[in-house]
Length: 50
Image (cartoon, rainbow, N blue to C red; front, side, top):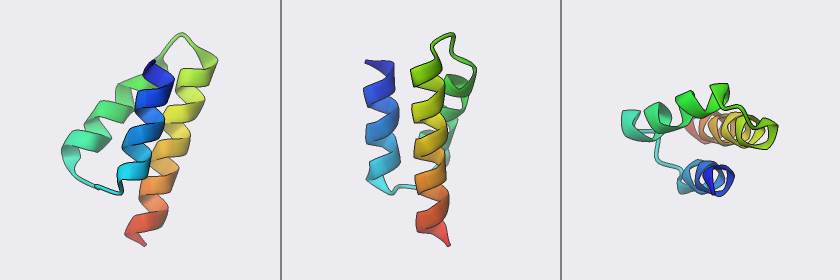
């Protein structure tokens, strides 16, 4: 569930603080897949902002 939420936030394309602040804690999640999805989502947000 957390992994899917992270992916969905990354696809929104919204660069607001709320989205970024929601993803940042997931980078420290115990689950490897959740951490990876959060990093991937943040990367997608970064690409869209360039």
